[in-house]
Image (cartoon, rainbow, N blue to C red; front, side, top):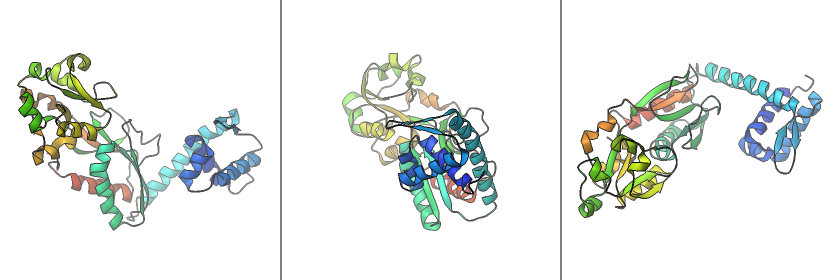
Length: 304
């Protein structure tokens, strides 16, 4: 290793490969694309091999580049974990906190907590990934992930924030016009609201039995967003089957009515909302956020 900035250049290289372009890596690092290019050039010159095949469309890795990336990302990830674990001995809440969660959950419950933390800890920065995909704290270098449902066996450390319950809801106006369903057969005749993507994400099959697609014969509205589905129910477009953290506050205010069809037996399975992390010893920023969001949600949860 001849260049004393080898480790720095290596971190930039890993960012470029992960981001897929010089410009994306430069935005992540808050530098110019030309500065990133110069560091990659310096790394290639130091090693004496080409790492990237550059074109106007995309970057691709040479064999040497692939080998370096595989080794480097493990080394850098281990180094980052070591830094976080050692920093956990300090009580200073600072640095960048990276979180991923559902968009609606993030807007309603995570951002208010982050606002409180920002006032208490001005040296804390946050990157919040609002996504419906199953984010991986290890692969994506996230400090925390909010995950819902039944947890699979894994090495991740889980903190339960609240039970995950679902509600069958409709607006008073819709029920006045269309009547209140008393059982699953009557529910089939109503206008239903459903998720746009995924395999029965809302769990209609738990109500009807069998494939949800066969049951939802009169789907009046589909959306890939929980807030939109709750809004459609508020507008009287039909009956929604949503998590209580989405519709609970609307039921509390009287804008939606909870329908106790079949005694809500769909909530009998143990399920929850969890905060997942990869590190055994959480840093001060992780501890601060975890405690703050548990307090904000409360027991029982504020939406129940």
